[in-house]
Amino acid sequence: MSKSNIGRMTLALPLMLGFPFAFGGYQLVSDWAAEGAALVVVGAVILLSGAAMLVSAVWLFVSLGQQQFPLWSGGVASLLSGGVLAAATISHVLPCSGLT
Image (cartoon, rainbow, N blue to C red):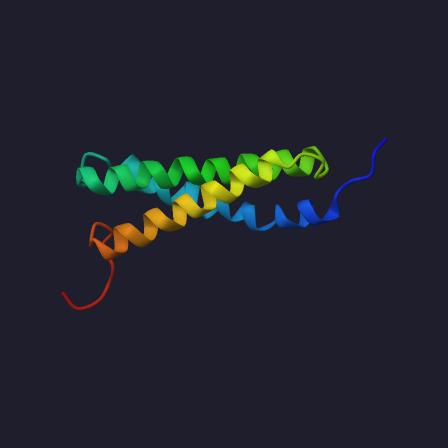
């Protein structure tokens, strides 16, 4: 049996943060009739990227860090979800508290 790659398995821990992204995206998509189309699209992208982060983290744990592809796909999904959140906040699609 080959030994595990502890470094890749350690990098899978931040990918477990895909759960809040997936849950938040699910909350946005579940009320799609009450929300605007742009917000529903943002929610769908966040839901899919959060789920991809979770799947890649589990894949890394199951393979004991032997494969590099799940780490790359989880990183891309993480960048996608962060970029979508930043773009939605800047373009005022995502409702934020504060003065209006």
